[in-house]
Length: 413
Image 1 (cartoon, helix red, strand yellow):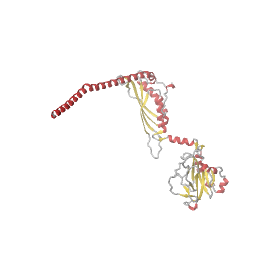
Image 2: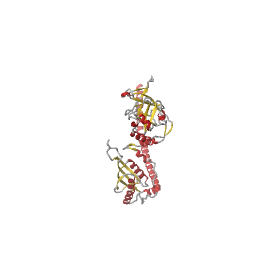
Image 3: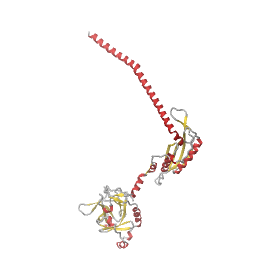
Image 4: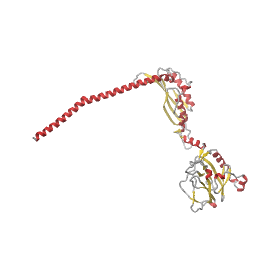
């Protein structure tokens, strides 16, 4: 009895497997495969309809624009089109600053109006242009070409240096320029190019004038322009000379013959003392209007250091600055010739230094407000930054700290 039941179970399982497989094969062949084929065919038909609708829409748009295209098309005659376009474009490129050699295109080649059309419609004329000039001239030429009311485009633009760059030669930015400009003859148009109508000039939004400031062959120029412009602009900042004080005068521990040295401090900024001596390399200092060392106010030269005062030159004048006096206060009265002779300063006045100071004075910014900055802006004019000193806890004056790190490098004049 048990054997019969097992046989029936096995037979039932076999029948189910065979039946299921037969049902799968029949369903796949009769139902699923025809469904997939119909779906793929439907997709092909939909794509075909979409392409035809796109072509129809493109045709309608072309028809609407055909009148304006005719006005911007080259003449239908190949020789006339080449002659007129050559006579218009070459002078424009030369006016932009390029020395141009423009080659005429090869025999005319056509383009079809759409993917389903077999008949050649419009005609493309490629003009090969070789030129030399700067990046600014190239940008000006591109802008002029885009403004022309002509159906054309710059298909290829290649730039390379026209000169070798060495350490002994400053690059001028001259470039070898290769352009391929494609102009079009619209099928059926019999237009005569005329640029007399100012309304035909096309408006553009691309800022071509910025190309010269971002010259990849000379580096970014816009930062230099902005910096130079900012120096002469008005500046909202503190009156730095009012807070620059002669803090101490002591005998230098490193100089020979007990030479004196003076220390300036800036009380509005968190700055270190600036050591000054009459020895070359330690006798000049600059006052800046900002913490970025971009706006120099004064360049001074120390002529003499006494027990309680120093004498410094600013331009052609000489001033006296006593201990704890501000630089602004000391600049109120300059020494006359009699005082210079009595103090023995006449022979110490540097005429060449006064010329440099006067030239820098012309670049001084106007101070229009008060702005507090976190870093120092008083530097000794040594080219490698100010040396610093600090006041010790015993009140004996500034202590010399050799090799101290963190000194701010002074910007050059």
